[in-house]
Length: 139
Ligand code: THU
Image: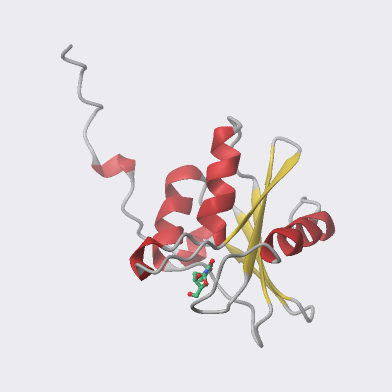
């Protein structure tokens, strides 16, 4: 698998996972991003207004961007029978911020691992290449 400290990423994802706020689904999810030689983690944060739920991946990505880094690898962890994969919304956000070659490792707590590339998760993505040149500021 790609050159990222996957064991450390697993430990950080698990630490974040244990802080997940998931009173509705009870599915605790942790994510860890490798970027700029550092690890940025996140957990899912649910809301009584279900649509406002924040996934662990987007949480970790936001932490990465806030430190002016760009993701180089992502690990996802949950205590499920099979490794979970990023939801559609997270895939779109990943495409915005990462290269199509971004390596992902989807893991279960029991040790199952599914390596993936972002390009496999969202082929033919809608991205900024479909938008014209950035509009000029008018003020
Ligand atoms: N969830 C994530 O955090 N990441 C995923 O990849 C899939 C789903 C969360 C959202 C929600 O809090 C719970 O898992 C059940 O969907």
